[in-house]
Amino acid sequence: MVSNIIDKHLPHSNKWRVIDIVVASIIAVASGVIFWAWDLVSTAPLALFAPVAPGFEGLLNGFWLFGGPLAAIIVRKPGAAFYAEILAAFLELTFGNQWGIGGSLIVGIVQGLFAEIGFAIFAYKVWNIGSTMLSGALAGVGCWLYYFFTNPGLGFLGQYGVIYLLTSIVSGVVLSGIVVWLLYKAIAATGVLDRFESGRTQVEV
Image (tube, rainbow, N blue to C red; front, side, top):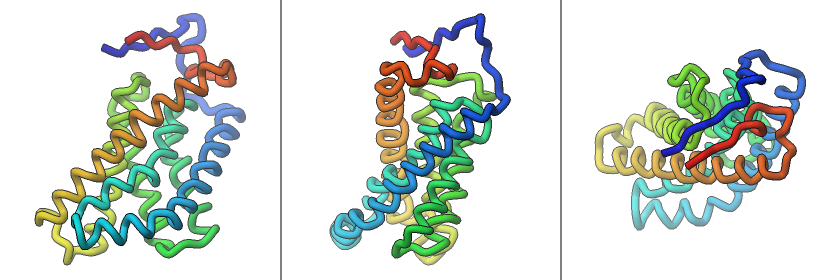
C-alpha cells in the first residue's frame, strides 16, 4: 500500500509560482528532445512490429507520453501535465520529424489532456505511484484515440484496434507511470526538489 505523508505546516497549494513554470518548462524541453530522438530511433522497431505483430507497436508509445506525468508529479499543479506535454510536442515538431503537425503537436495536445485527467480525477490531492500510473495509462488511451479517430479505416473495435489500445495502456503504465515515479523518487532523493511539495513528501510503502 502506498500513502503520502505531507508536511502539515506546508499545505498543498494549486497556485502556480514562477519556479513551477520554470521547472515544468525545463521538463518539457528535455522531454521534447527525447520525443524527437525517439522519432528517429523508433523507425526500425515500428517497421518490425507492423508486419510481424500488428497492434503491438503501441508498446513503443510510452516514450512519447512521459513528459506530462513527470511534470505533474514534480510540480503538482493543475495543468502541469497538459502544459508540459504540449510544449514538448511543439518542440518535437519544431525540431522536425516524419509525423508532421498532426502526429506531433495535435496528438501531444490529446495525450497531455488525458494525462492531466489522471490527476484531476483525484482533485489534485493524490500524488502517488497509483495516480502517476493512471495518468500514463490515460495518456496511452489518448494516443490511441487520436490515431484511430484520424484513421477510422483501422477500426476501433477490430483486433488491431484492441491490441493497439491495450499495448498503448501497458506502455503508458510502465514507462510513463512506474518509470516516471522511480525517476521522480531518484530526483527527489538528491534534494533538488526541496522547494516543492514533491520534495518534502515522504512516501511509505
